Length: 189
Image (tube, rainbow, N blue to C red):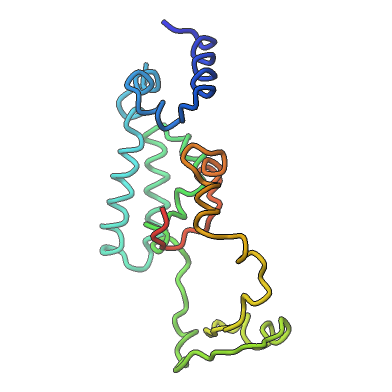
């Protein structure tokens, strides 16, 4: 059996050789080490949670169209008592995921847009004018020259972000662990 020290040394050597965490995780031996001594429900916790969340997303909205957030909370509490899933507390995105987010968020008042017949397009708007006329009205507006003085548009590009968020990079790990981006429905993966 390999000692913790030997395994740590092996990890350091793999890092020196440029082997990514994703590549290491694909190794059968690493999977066996992760699951060594764990019960079936602990080994398959991710699968169980995915199945559970799928049931919540598919079944709950059709059963209880209004109070499903309360039901989800009750079911999650019950699940945590049946399975030892304390490690889920480390995942801050579990309830803000774009898949289930619309089902557990606070209901939106659709009357805010009831009187909207067109969307105004404005330009040369000062910050004070925007705050006074649009910022807190819940009414849509298109600010045509809103990026005119925004210097980030000269730096940010697809290639810029691609160079920062390479597979295995610390920046990508930070996004996955800390949920850096808001969970809007996008096609960005």
